[in-house]
Length: 302
Image 1 (cartoon, rainbow, N blue to C red):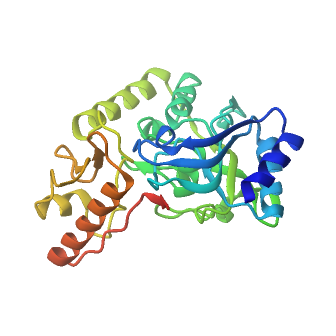
Image 2: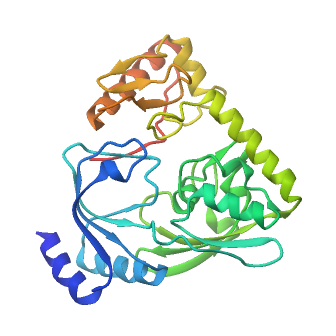
């Protein structure tokens, strides 16, 4: 069993690292579903994370990297992997007149708030996205006309077979909801963002306005993964789902939000199986009635 070797090596090499056994993934995903992770490690620094990832690669251990768990759906029966949780990699600092450097585990809300206090604009769109910096870079998260690729100047990541590297410019590979790190193998450790100096009050007002719009239109009161599907070319997923009469449709505790059809929410007691069954049903109905194939944004770990 791989985790027996892990227990021995972790105790020897990382005696101070927080290690959790059979940790429920429901505690670490915004959907609030998911069974136990065989092992969960919470490195305290980028260096410690890189050392752990190098060891996992050499030993062949199965690894899943998790930040805020905002785009993740974990199996009800649990996941037989080493979850590397980046929550402690949450430092942030001013790196220059127009730049900020932050750890992968920092929430986008805290990052945007820091930038606002520093009088730096460009991250207002990110303030309400329920994710961490690492995950947001990996999927090029965006909203209200902004996305991470517009502000990310450099990313330091652990790369399989290469170790820690810093990528800039075109090497970052940003596109719609994708980046050079989105295949799940490279692990973002920190990123440097280039922002625009601005008036603190104006930046704050823009953040508050976008927050008001989110509260009015999105079901923020219930657990979800945010937008369930990627935006299909020439369409809006929520509009297609609503046009197909699926607003309010449910399987078990999972429901298409009556407030915004682009969100599948956990109304209480939903399972991973419920959510997957509802997603599959939505895809089938929308494809049959509109000819559009919806692609989930949510990553499923079974």
